[in-house]
Structure formats: C-alpha cells, structure tokens
Length: 474
Image (cartoon, rainbow, N blue to C red; front, side):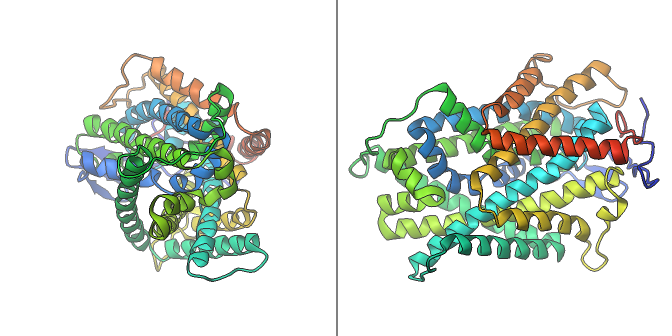
C-alpha cells in the first residue's frame, strides 16, 4: 500500500496529502493543532446534541400512525443498528483521527470507488435530511402561527414550503458568515431543548402511567405488533440516529480516545434511544394510530395539549421549532464539510473547497449544500426525504463495517487503533448485514431514488476520478 494518496482526476488535480502527529495532549495536522480537551461528558454532549432534534418532534405522529405502541420497538431496532455501527466506527476513529468520519474510513479502507460513492452520497444524504428538517420546521411554524391566532388562508401547504425555503436560505447565509456563529446558535439550542424535553417526558410518563392524573385511554385502534410494520417503521425513523458518527469527527480532540471515544459514542446512542422510546410510548398512550395519523408531523403539539393544556402545546411548539432549527443548521454545516473533504481528495473539482477570505468558511461548498436543500424542501415530501436520507446513510454505515474487516485483514503498518472491537469480525459483520438489511424494508420509491443516487455517484467516479488512489493512504 502507498503511504499517501496519488493519481489525478480528469482536470489533472491531485489529492492534498495531510500529515498527522498525535501526542497525549494534542493532534497536530498541517492546518491546525487540536488540543485534547474533550472528556467523556464532552463526547456524550456532541453525540446527544446531534441526534436529539427534529426526529423526536416530527416522527411520533408518522411512526405512531404506522404501528401504534409497536413503534417503540421500531426505535429500539434502529438504536441497535446504530450501536452495531458505533463500535467499528470507534475503532477506526482512534486509528485515523481526522475530520471526514465515515467517508475517510471507507476511502482509505476500501478504495476510491467506494470512497466516491460514500462521499457524494453523504453529501446528498445530508441534503435530503436537511430538507426533511426544514419541512418539519415549516409545519411547526404553521402551528406557532395558529397558536397566536394568525390564520394562513386556504393554502397551508404552500406556506409550509415558503417557510422551509426561507429558513434554508437563512441557515446557509448564517454558516457562510462564520462557523463560530453557527456553533453558538447550535449549543444554545441543544441545551435549552434537552431541558425542555426531559421535563416534558417525565411529566408525560407519570401522566400516562396514572401516577399524577387519570391515565389516557390511548384510543381504541389496535397496535401492529408484527415484524413487517416494525421493521418498515424502523427504516423510516433511522434518520433520527444519523448524528452518532459525528463523535468520530472530533477523535483528535478527545482525551484518552481509546476509552472515552467508544464510551461517548455508545453512551449517546443508548441515552437517545431511551428518550425516543419513552417519547413514542407517551405519544401512543395518549392517542391511537388513526388519531396520530390525522395530526401528522405536529402530533406532539396535540399530545402536549392533551397532557398539559395550552401551556403544553406552547412548550412543544417552541421545542419543535428549536429542534428542527438545530437539526437543519447542523446538517447544512456537516454537508458543506463533506463536500470540502471529497474536494480535497480530488473527487470533486478543487474550486469546491475554496475558502472565503473574509469569513474563513467554505462558501462554495455551503452553496452546493444549501442550493439543493432549498429545492427539495419546497416539495414537502416528508417521508420520502427522511427515507432517502436513511438509505444513503445506511449504505455508508454498512460500508464502515466492511472497511473495518478489510483493514484488519490487511493490517497495514499505520493501523494502530487505541480501541479494538471485541469478538473479532462478528460485530462489524452483523453491523453491515443489519445496515444493508434495513434498507429492504423501505418504501420502493425511496429505494429507487437512493439507488439512482448510488449509481450516479459510481458513474461520476468512472468519469472523473478513476485514476485517483486513496486506499491505504493517510
């Protein structure tokens, strides 16, 4: 294997190699010196903060309508799949502590074709996820207007699209003007959101269990405790867990990464899974499937109103707005960084990774993220957007597991992880099968759209970057 990336793309551009020196105190790259300041709590905060967002406010109505209380099992299944991928991701991150995450692991473990497919699919997968969050934001903004007595006329769907598009433009501009501004907004939203959610779920759980009031009937329509609806709903709601791998992107800043990184990644998935399961249990205990289906994307508002009256509805509307804003903002930031990473590796033209001289941000990559997001957000196809995002991320997570098996088989000299997944190849193999297998339970339209994206990215590799070599290169 080579010690650095090689070859050139169609335009004669070569990948930009970056050296990394690791010490107990810092990770030093060509661009920066990252001090190891994050402990287990900091790692947990990043993992939880990136996963708790729009999903917990938008999915209860959609998932509850599919399976009733059985939707709790769907969220548990998605959590288990995320856990199976979290362990291999932790091992790879301690061996390759660079930004880029899953794309970087796969391109160095499996080669340029797999890297191109995943790098470009990650870009487009985040675009679909961001559009999903923005549509959710539009629906919650509509409920907020209704709460304060402002009518929207006979075309509420058009208002949702308009709000989603305006918010998409606003978040793109915010990220262009500086990552620091976007990060401050993100941290504030996550802290406020978590406080509200924990208090609301505790009150809701006591209420539906009859501890603090009369237990709601939960409606009369039967739950669907069967494998097919549980797994198909799990495939839909997997979008809720897309953020857990973000912990890997800060591996170079975590103290004692061999211990803290896997604990932070696994711990954040477990905590978020419990919060999602409790949320769905409360939702489906208050209303049955038909009622939740009628309420749709903002069913949580009606649940808040049922449990706590108008103040409850108000809290949920504010929480829903904060959550969808947080998720959309974080996704636009991640999308631009995905584009930046593949451009530095010569899989996209070099101009895509240009940095704005005034703000120090990748403004071209942000434009390539925000543009398609705005177009997709205008469609309001919530379920399709969520499932295609899940499809493209499940492909990446499955390939992360395959990359771990391939790298362990080759055992290159540079591969010295501080954490190793126990049990040999068992966990990564099961993780790959679970990730790819969940795709089979998606709606056929989502599989067709996702499959087209994969084929298009593979075609781009053959046209543009087939002479670039990334496998085994650090």
